[in-house]
Image (cartoon, rainbow, N blue to C red; front, side, top):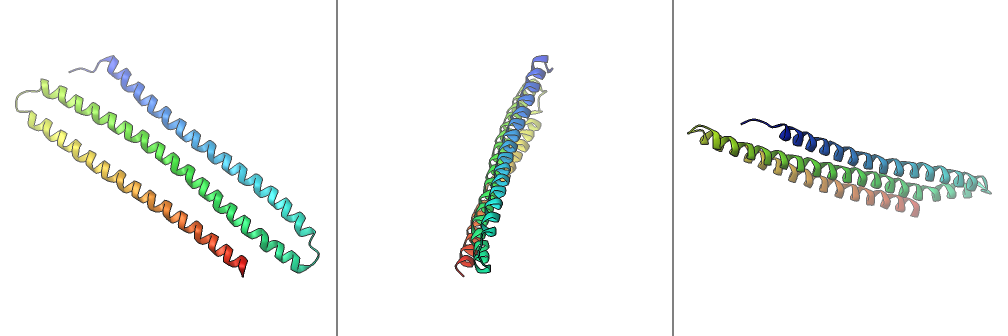
Length: 180
């Protein structure tokens, strides 16, 4: 069995397409992160100007302190929103990369099984045991990969729940502090 130039070209094309898909996903994530960061910097700058003007207009120390306390809650909420947005973009990018990787693994497995089938048809008698062993190894590897992806997805869900809980806790502390 020989590899034809068309097979090599097809494999190279699939590899290039996979790399381009990864590059596009990474660029889209980078663009989102840059937009979120630029918006946060612009918002922080505008808030600091407004807060400085308000503080300069304070008539006494008590008003100055109350203004500072009033600025803390929105700042905390914006920081939480910023962190949550960054986390969401990272999660989306990870999901996209996982999809591309899963597609490539599935294509590779399909190609490998096809190759094994072709080899087994042209192989000498008695080699069917070796081919069956290779298919068994491939199935075990796929099973392990599936288990790994399930665990990774569960870990991601747990991390998302922890981020949400931490955000709510910080908001609660900030509200409690404001009320005190």
